[in-house]
Length: 311
Ligand SMILES: NC(=O)c1ccc[n+]([C@@H]2O[C@H](COP(=O)([O-])OP(=O)(O)OC[C@H]3O[C@@H](n4cnc5c(N)ncnc54)[C@H](O)[C@@H]3O)[C@@H](O)[C@H]2O)c1
Image (cartoon, rainbow, N blue to C red; front, side):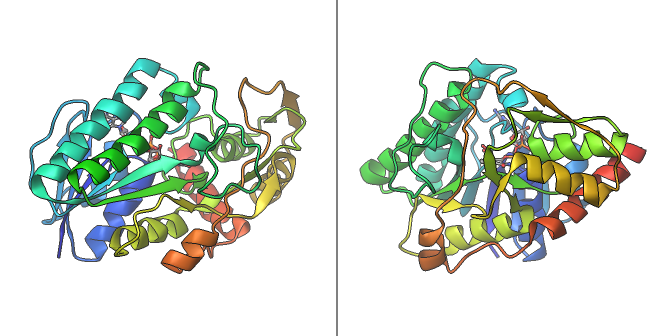
């Protein structure tokens, strides 16, 4: 049984990771400032004897003793991370320095939840970990993209200079129950619009592609990376099955039995036209690959959103 800190543990991914690690018998400390996360995501764990919630902002140092740190704290959807871009970059830079300082002090292994966004608008498809990316340093998404790039740099520097035991994962679009209803991401947008009978909004002509990984597959990948000896990453975790946004809209309409229309709006600035992980490295080093099909995952997610919309 390990004592495990999860920053951002009340968020979408973090709360599923809390569930998973508690079920494995670990002692879990969830740290979150509840900016984009919610106590509702972890309410069922609050009375568990091995679960502890600390409301704390990681731009301030934290002094606790742990064996492992899953460092996930950072708003992940554009609506949330652009709400206060300076805070987003502070979370990525100062927050990551604080977590690395903690890991260094107590000799804990630390895993950073980085992102496919560090590849920017990629000129290489699909993106392997060796690709350095094509990122706009001064755009509205830069607080997040560049913030995560600096977070990766910090991880590597603490590793090289101070021997901190690190892991870096680059997460591609992940979806599932507990995504925030209002986060503006394509899957939650489409499902909520379809369930409410509103038109589904497609940005651009819908031919841009994305790949979507179901939450349980991702959690397995995170834990495998943390537990793997002699492999620090960075490693891509995502689902390599690409789908056009317009096709996704049609599948959501089918699965929700919705009669909603599809409407088209202009693409936001810096929106990548294509995003697909190369997961060769994860397959080789972690023996990991996603197993949940898009339809299966969407059905679970639709079930969650319909209950949430009911009240
Ligand atoms: N969901 C995805 O598709 C995706 C893709 C790539 C990377 N990621 C990364 O995974 C991590 C989790 O993403 P998510 O989808 O669960 O997002 P989320 O917004 O649901 O979760 C992030 C959590 O971090 C907390 N947080 C934010 N700033 C904080 C701060 N300063 N101090 C303490 N807590 C803070 C939020 O309250 C929230 O609970 C993020 O680091 C994100 O960048 C997610």
